[in-house]
Amino acid sequence: MTTSLQKWRIPLRLIKRYDIVFSCSRRLLHEGPDTIEELLDRHIVKKEKHLDDEEEELLNRRRLTSTRREALGLYRDIIRATRFFMWPDSRGVLWRDVLRENARKEFEEARLETDPEIITRLLIGGHDAVQSAIDKLAEKQRQQIQKERGGGD
Image 1 (cartoon, rainbow, N blue to C red):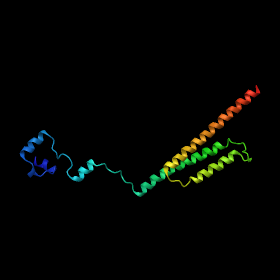
Image 2 (image 1 turned 60 degrees about the vertical axis):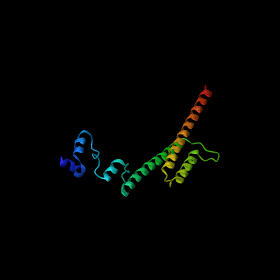
Image 3 (image 1 turned 120 degrees about the vertical axis):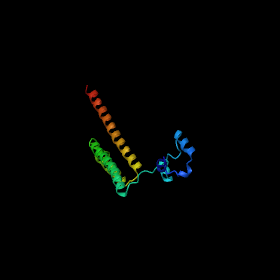
Image 4 (image 1 turned 90 degrees about the vertical axis):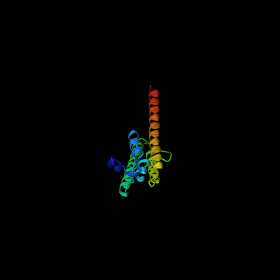
């Protein structure tokens, strides 16, 4: 009995015979942490594990690589989509060239942006604009085909 009480670090002089008998029927208050540090460790919200500089840099590179990959994918989608715009504008310049020039200019302006929220907004806005332009072009082509078929019959 003495050894089991010693492992709980309860001084023997504080324990009376009544406490030993009574503790058998109920849980001892000291069945918890032995030190204040253990108590605090058990009940205080712990901070996230801190990464060292190399791990944090690697994580930032992965995030950067991810957004860079998305930005390059968007740029490629824009270049692919512009090949369908083969008619000239009022100055005689092909819309394809105008759209590619504007896309390049906007990408260059946003090149040094570091805020992830703004980058995400730009990427989403770019994807939406490309999709909208392709949808409008497809609708106009459908209308043109229907017009030609209706006029030819």
